[in-house]
Amino acid sequence: GRTSEIDKQLPTTKIFTDAFTSRREDLNYIYKLIMIIDNQDKFSYEDRINKAFKFENDDMERTSGDERFNEFVLGGVEILYERVIANSRNYDDALNNFYTFLDEFNSRYKKDLEIDYNLFNEIEL
Image 1 (cartoon, rainbow, N blue to C red):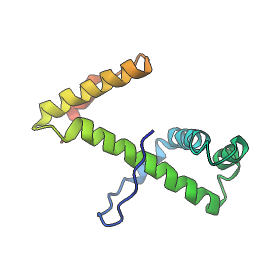
Image 2 (tube, one colour; image 1 turned 180 degrees about the horizontal axis):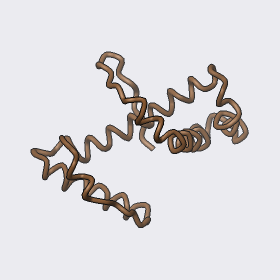
Image 3 (cartoon, rainbow, N blue to C red; image 1 turned 60 degrees about the vertical axis):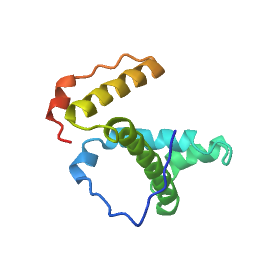
Image 4 (tube, rainbow, N blue to C red; image 1 turned 180 degrees about the vertical axis):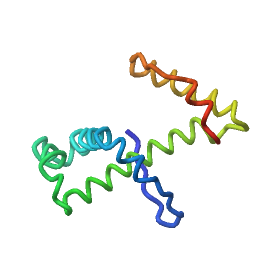
């Protein structure tokens, strides 16, 4: 997966707590997957399992994991921006780019995605 360093020179953007609270289980699942899959060349399988499960409540261990998780999230946001927004002149371009991105994603991972495309009519760019 793609990661990106956080640029501390840029202003931060806040995400409302409700957005995280309602997706907490999903975020924890993704966090654990990243901890298990990432750094296979640096850490043993046991160390990665510990980082994912055992050290959840250890602030020192969790901080480095959180930083790595945030790097993956930022990398994903950058991919979405580049693929959907950067070359869009208007809403229709962005929507078409998003559909193309989803189709390519679906083809790449060969999964049937059930997407309610009506949700995208509510998005403001």
